[in-house]
Length: 346
Image (cartoon, rainbow, N blue to C red):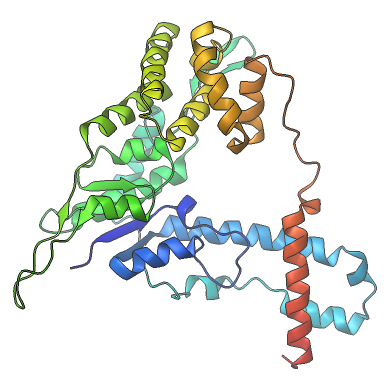
């Protein structure tokens, strides 16, 4: 029996590919050779929504261009016929075979999601922000992640014989929730999966060894626990204590690049960390991480940390997505494909 791997949205998206559902194809194809690919329905919906949004922006960029406006009306009509987003084709795409799953008990899932949102538990995000003179410590952002999480839990719990399932994911807050289920194993890439899933060599022509799942080592579990505590730190005292531990882990080369990004995102989102960026110990931890990995943050996260550190260089929000060079390239590719189709009489 093949192992099962469930893929989260951020590991399967490709906004610019309109003919195939799944992105990250080289890695997912490696999984498909060894595993059964499982996609929650919400993941499929998210991917299609992202593709449709990008398609519409690219189409608007193309049809608003000078060259398009110079075309004869008849040619424009032919182009408009071809420029249609085919959602059904994407939903039916099995170029990488997968099985779709959905929440089985929606009433129960709704109650669980409601409880998670009210109590600000993972996978709902944790923030600390000032709103006028009042303060709110959390947000209910995360409904889609919660729906996916409940889909995964219900699916895994429905499998017989205590079978464990891998989840390909890149979201620490989401992973924090899934870690509560000991039948779910979160992995960040194929190599991570391969290291955790081992199949003994065949001992004879008729006897096959049983696959073995290698548990995470204790040191790695401790680092993940430390990052979770830092992400959810409730006060300044806790933050300073965690900074000491994280600095020690960094000095011992126990942190990965993803761990450093986790630290930066936590710093940007939790004011119990961000407000201390002027303190010497916090600054000494965050500044070198920010200099090395800060460009991977979004504009809001980057500027929040840069201001807290007293840096003058800020990211500028793009004026308009219509002038994005990637979108211009996509529009050019779309135009070339349409010319080819029209020439063939399609």
